[in-house]
Image 1 (tube, rainbow, N blue to C red):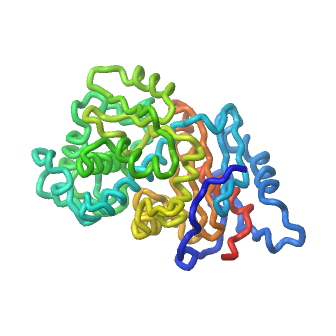
Image 2 (image 1 turned 135 degrees about the vertical axis):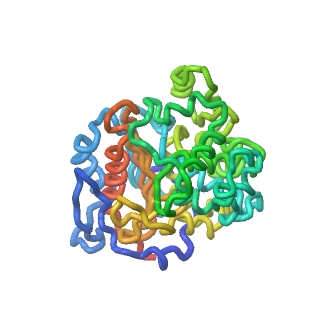
Image 3 (image 1 turned 120 degrees about the vertical axis):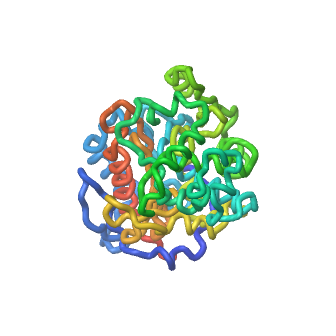
Length: 391
């Protein structure tokens, strides 16, 4: 198996130790797995994983949807399978994009380009002062990161392309989102999941760095992780143009991230990456921001982003960090994408599991929670086949 070089986690085991109950929803219900080390005759992890994949592939999506399954422990890929594709192929990771946007915020803070999570939108987006009311100008970055700022909630009845249809007609998406938020009012400060709020995070990255989120990511995140994004593809949606034409070009691109009319990449969706790239991102967060001998994002950010910051509503015991979902009872954190993609990280097992799928956006499973939640469930099931880390 290939090796994705990394440095082992430093100190996280003491803060994230918990029993690993499988994170299964809807179609998959399972109890806690016994660690392989307790079995009289341990089953090799790859064999156990293969058996689970064979038993659940059809249940979850059907073999026409799952494209890649990768499981890594201690920096080594212990299982890697592709269907109708290879390691060279890329897929739209959809909502996993949010975790990348969050990491860019953390790097910008580390570099002093953003003062911190207490910075306000008025300070961070001075070019939008005309549409910021005193109340919206005072919104702190932390509230946007944790979906507690009352931006318009993500609707499950989205346009076929996965984005609220009315945004395509707007000349300035960020101004439209901010104006809508001003009209909505402050809300009650509780968790309200919002793709529009996450796009504001991408706008903050662009303002703070003076470049697009994709170009900033290439320099400070992708290149250090050996994620090849050349040639850059970040074409813009334009008012009056047909989004379907642009998205057809997008489907032919390799690594890609479309942008709004101002050149702000969609902070919440449509980043195209290889499945191995997702493993690298998960491993980076597992190792508290370290890759090789380089601190890519601070340990402070990596831990804060992936530990509970706010309680969620309607998601059971799952909590939320900075654009990462956190299950403290089961000891995992994860990013998930509509259409069946997930990155699940298990610090207790020093492991990362990635599922990449292609449930079509117009498939009834594609825009609802079915595909993403079941991808998380499958990834957690596979991680449970691994022995717990003894370090």
